[in-house]
Length: 316
Image (cartoon, rainbow, N blue to C red):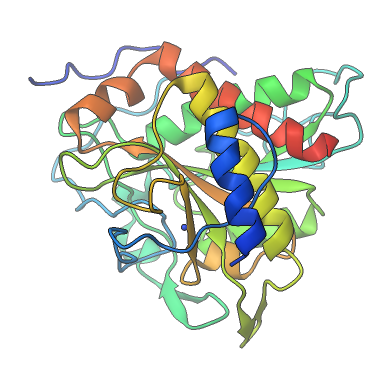
């Protein structure tokens, strides 16, 4: 599937102590294993709404352009158990036999289905909205468009190493999937790793990326006790490689500048039974971060950083 290389609109003008230490090394040495860091003193509190690590933008009155090259029907083939995988045969590589699920945050068409995405679903520790519209840059470049493009690039890179890759969606449905279904996709695929791709929507001046890790949650249908440690390792490796490859700094407003944030309010993490993290690639509402997120060359670097982190984790 072609990448979304069309030019975006012109820009105007988060419980393991040892793992936390390893994560700090990762971010400076770029690329070792590690784990979570508790929220820093300046970390933003979890935002209300659906299981979107990124903030929810109000539904726009006018329609944004459809993501170019990302809205075609699902393609399936040897790159996937089913669903959104590549149709071409996979090469033999270091990740042969491994399954990765990529979860592009939100859906470009959610904005046209606000009633459906506002329906409450079970997240293991309570109930939240099915999904949200996601955020956007001030000039209207939608998070859902960004996440699909980066997810396609990430899929290509992982398949080149022999991994079987599945997307939770490929803009091939009218809305969603809901957050509980996103978690089930990774669980049913028995994925070796799941990465949910997002971009944040915070205040101007808040910059950088962060990787969200699952907290230990037990009860009411959620039990992350078996994946906390492995998810922390996955997240720290991604963070380390993301720094090196993109040149972006860890978030200056979440995670105490570790690039890691641990949360217990996201259904996509609470309901997962396989290692999973969310990656917030930057803040779409900050002009400097927005300039990166709207750059095709930077999005390729973001995908490469995530791919390198995932590969490092899967290779052990």
